[in-house]
Amino acid sequence: MNAIDALGRLLRPAGGGVHLVSTGKAEQLALQRRLYGAADDAIVRARWREELARAAGARAVLLGIPSDAGGGFQRGANLGPSAIRARLLEEDPGWPARARAAGLVDLGDVFVVPQLLEDEMLSDAQRAATARALYPDLEPAERAAWPVSPLSIAERALSLVLAANPAARVFALGGDHSAAWPVVKALASVRAGIGIVQVDAHTDLLPERLGIRTCFATWSYHANDLLGRGGRLVQVGTRASGHDRAHWESTLGVRQFWAEEVRADPAAALEAIVAHVRATGVSAVYFSNDIDGTDASFADATGTPEPGGLAPEFVSALVARLGREVGLAGGDVMEVAPYVARSAGGGPRTVALAARYLRETVDAALG
Image 1 (tube, rainbow, N blue to C red):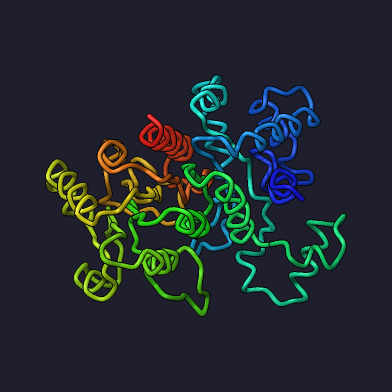
Image 2 (cartoon, helix red, strand yellow):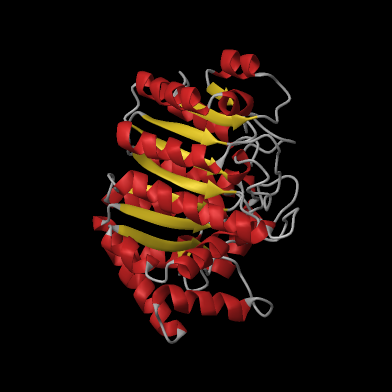
């Protein structure tokens, strides 16, 4: 089976990663038709397959990972990717064509079984049962080798793309923040010496949470180890932590810029962050942007909003500087939960900011 056929089994057209049968199905199909400029679902799939065929020569790829099974408080980030894509179309109906012209290929969405997270957490019986549901046309011996959980599917799909096109930048839409983990793993397997700049209110630096190795609270711990520590993981906007900065920096070798420090002198913080990243000698950075790194007054439609966070202008300036002076291997926008806003208009306001962040990250990487 060639890579395009494999991607066609692993993924779904953009907007189609959440399994719907009745409620919400009409809206999902309408979004897909708008995204692909298609009059019916057969044309949607045909144009999506054309996009997959372009991935081997793309400058960058985009993948939706609409999974919030790795979250720990309020859920709802599974609807983030569709909401962000819909907002992009609302603001700029020509967004798909402009992205394509810039060399960005939208791979679509991971198809999510919402009760699953990563294959290593599953029994053999559960893996086999889910594989039968996802890949019914494959023989049992063949389907046993296919991933069934959203993080495992994302890693396999991106690994297929990067095997053919290792220079491609990778952008992702989550989903809870565990969705960044398969992206970083796939990139690190083909790009030596990358770093991560993580905008986040939280550290996500637990080795495990309630016995779970991979979730929203642990992915950064494992990514930090994957990178070899040494300050290659830089966390910006931290303010909700059970330990102080000295603990994390001394025990795990991360570098943190807490929100209080950034807010006190944004210009100086920006210079310090960029200087540190450059001093590590990384070849490029992955910009992982948890929407809760931004102050809750701007973005409260997320599972764990926090006051005292970063201003959007600072986040925008940071990704632009990193793109110009270091280079981006890719980036994401995570934890956008459109329907759990705490204020009037909080959902649309948060989604609009997330769409802006995605555009700015893509521009910083490809501009």
